[in-house]
Amino acid sequence: MLPPIQVYFTAEFPANTGALIEQLLSRGVSKHEFILDPALHGLSPTQLFKHQNCSFSHYPFALVADTRTLLELEAQNVPTLALVITRSHTAFDEWDLYDGPDLRLLTPLVRLALLRAMAQERFTLDNATHQRPNLSSAEWFWDPPERPFRFDHKMWQVKSLRVDLIGAIQACMELAAKDADCEALYLSFESQAARTGQAFAGTAGRENQ
Image 1: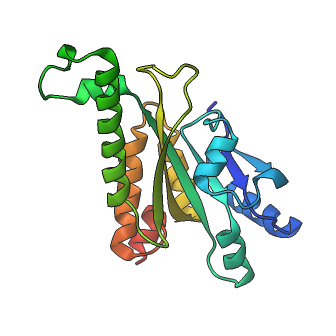
Image 2 (image 1 turned 120 degrees about the vertical axis):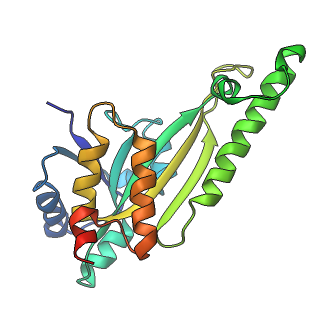
């Protein structure tokens, strides 16, 4: 059996409202673990990921019920959650992708600085491509290394996309599948949402539009 998918509450939901979200998500095939911790209130997706020590435990993604979710419920609108997906990149990864002049002629520290700069530029450009106001966001940050000069020093990217409850259930099922390409799936969800200008609504939602 697959591990549960984590759902974080980053706003103070009334007990009945939080229970409603849990009940609706539980209609899907995937199991969920609901985290209600006042220390998480007000955190952005990136702040939440850092607070969790750069890990969502079982998967490189999680769902977040935030202030926007709460306001949508209070206004009796269709509620949306944030689907948050993460990935990491190192200087080693950048070297594997590099096809320019031989970097081995450089000193190790210069080589490391160049590779890190290229990695930063890669995520910066990717973030700019996937920033859509009110629909999706993307940020990156370096995870502080234990030692200052390390080629395996990780740079993290945190992207989030608004999904309705049906979209959340479908997205989690696909992302949690064995050998799932989470980045490719996320881009597919994001593309589908961008075409309508609304939260990702899943296959059924697209068919009804």
